[in-house]
Amino acid sequence: MARSTRRPHAETSRRAPARTFLRTADGVLVDAVYTPGAAVPGAAGARDAVFVVAHGFTGDADRPHVRRIATAFARHGAVVTFSFRGHGASGGRSTVGDREVYDLAAAVAWARGFGHDRVVTVGFSMGGSVVLRHAALYGGDGRDGDAGADAAARTDAVVSVSAPARWYYRGTAPMRRLHWLVTRPAGRAVGRYGFRTRIHHRDWDPVPLSPVEAVPRIAPVPLLVVHGDRDGYFPVDHPRMLAEAAGDHGELWLEPGMGHAEHACGEELLHRIGDWAVARAG
Image 1 (cartoon, helix red, strand yellow):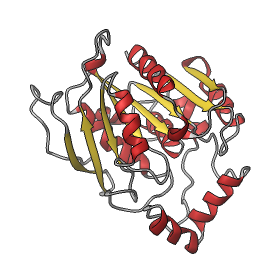
Image 2 (tube, rainbow, N blue to C red):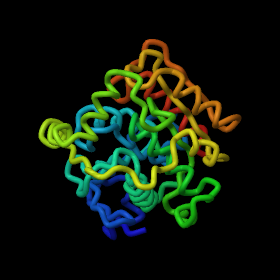
Image 3 (cartoon, rainbow, N blue to C red):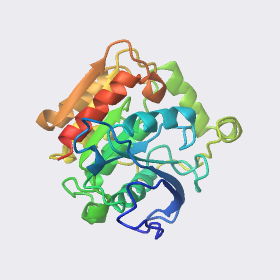
Image 4 (spheres, rainbow, N blue to C red):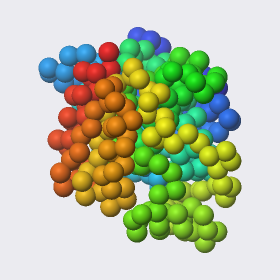
């Protein structure tokens, strides 16, 4: 897998922020940001962990809600944020969760280059589906071919927040609007000019492994599924399907009163996720 060669010296990497473009395995340039973790009394082991944050659809590394997530996780370890293809300053066009796995793999490999012993992937909504598929393909049971062999891109713990369990879900009004945005020329124009998100016009071919199909392949990597019981996009049958597919290696937090993805995550929940990740990532 190709990635940036701009690597910090091992003695300074954990102290210095960095920003660069990573080249994915399929040749897309992805904007990525490294933020050192804050020195917090009592956060034993945090300096060895790095959180790689996978944002939701129409987000990017510079959006305020993504920076807020990064700031919270920086109390538990270093943080890598990046913009998925078609978002922000990254190149390419969004495939809405399919080839975005390559973007995450490049970001994880870059994060490991800073010398951290443990990598935690945390994804929100679309990013939540991507972290599940990434963990299955890179360092899970390896049943999907060459991807499983790239040890640099593997993760040590996975947190999926507000993710769908299955593709093509249209059971809520927000998801029907999203499907219009993705599948119609007028919708893609709104995405480009209204949400700064460039969406690919081609349908999936082949249809990628679904999140619920990916989950059993993640073991033995620890998995946390977080979902709000007031999520307006994906009702609670989605996280329950994911948790059931995970079996004993997964954990479900069904959060009372929580809505959808980054905007719905309060500081207390983010720090609980950070504590869980540092404890479970080995």
